[in-house]
Image 1 (tube, rainbow, N blue to C red):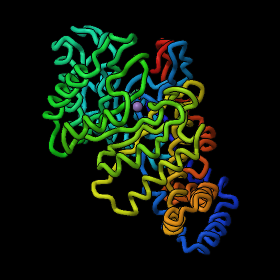
Image 2 (image 1 turned 30 degrees about the vertical axis):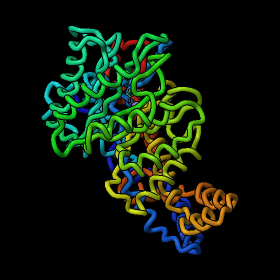
Image 3 (image 1 turned 90 degrees about the horizontal axis):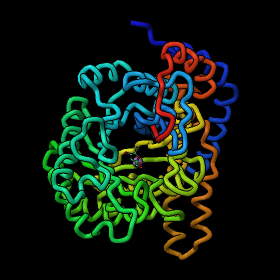
Length: 432
Ligand code: LRH
Ligand code: MN
C-alpha cells in the first residue's frame, strides 16, 4: 500500500523554533497585564488547551454552490483520506480530535476498520449526520417533497429507517449522538400544511428517538429556509425547542449560526436554550447574507464572542446538564479546506478565551445599576484583548504548531497529497 505522507511532530517542533520569536515575551507581558486584573494566564492557557471542536467530514473537501465547485489539488476521495486530512489538522492545532460524519456521504464499508484508522490518528467520532435531503442511487421513494414529514407514510418510514441506520453505524464507530436536519418545506403558499407537517415530524422523530441508546442524544437542527424557499417545517429555535421538549431528555437543539434571518440575535437564542436546558450543540460558521457557511469568525467575530460570552457564563455558573457539542459546519469554496478549518478552530478558541476575560461581577453590577455603557465597555475590554499568545502557546505546549498555516504550507502536504491522490472526476456543482 502506497505510503501516506504525514507531517511529523519533529517538523512541527522545528518550525516552532522559527515561529517562536517574541511569543514567550508577548505571553509574559500579557500575563503581567492580566495579572493586574487578578486573571491567571496559566488558567486561561489550560482552558484553551482543553477546548475541543469537531470537524465536519464534509468540510475537508472543496465546497461549492449550485453554480459551481472548483475542486483543488489532492482532494480527499473517500472517508479514509478525509480522516487523514482531519488527522493533519489535529496535529497542527490540537483542538479538533473529533470528526462528525455525514451518511451516506461517508458511509463506511467497515465501520470497525474506520474506527481503528481514526484511532491511529488520535481521532474519534462525534455526532452522526443523517441525510434525507437527497435521493441516493437505487432509493425506492424520493425525498423531493419531504422526508420525515412527507404526506406518504412510506417515505416517512424510509427516512426513519435511514436515521436508525445512522445510529447503528454510529454505535460501532463510538459516536454518541445523531444530528437530524431535514430540508422538508415548501416553495409555494398552500403547498405544506404547517400543523399536519409538524405532527408528522414528531411522529417520525418519536420512532427515531425510541431507537436511541440510553447514553445517546439526538440534536434537532432548525433552519429558516433553503432548499425550501417559502416554508420550512423546522424553521426556527422555537419550533425546535418545542419538539425537543415533546421528544424527551435525550433530544436537544442544535444551533447552526447560518440558519437564521439576517440580524437575528443568536446569542439571545443561545441564552434561552441554556436556560431551558435544551442547548445540544452548535454548527459554527459565519455568514453575511444567507446560509453562506463561511469561516467561523470571518464576518461577525463580535457575534461569535457574544455567543461564547453566554456559553462561558453558563459554564462558570455551573448550569445543570450544560455540555453542548461544538462542531464546525462550513463550505470552503475558495480556500484550502485544511487551512480554513485550522483558522476557524483557532477563532473559536480565541472567542472562548476572550469570554473568560469578562469581569462578570462588574458586568452584573453594571446591569443591576442600569449602566449600559459600562456593561458594553466590560464586554468590549475582553473582546479587544489580543489573546493570540495564549492561543498559540496553548497549541505549542501540547505539540501543535505556533503558526499552523505557515507550518502546513512549508510541509508541502497538499502537493504531496496531489501526487498521492490522482484527481478523480468530481462533481463540479453542489456543496460537496
Ligand atoms: C444544512 C446543514 C446541515 C448539514 C448540511 C451539510 O444547511 O447545515 O447541518 O447536514 O448543512
Ligand atoms: Mn449545519
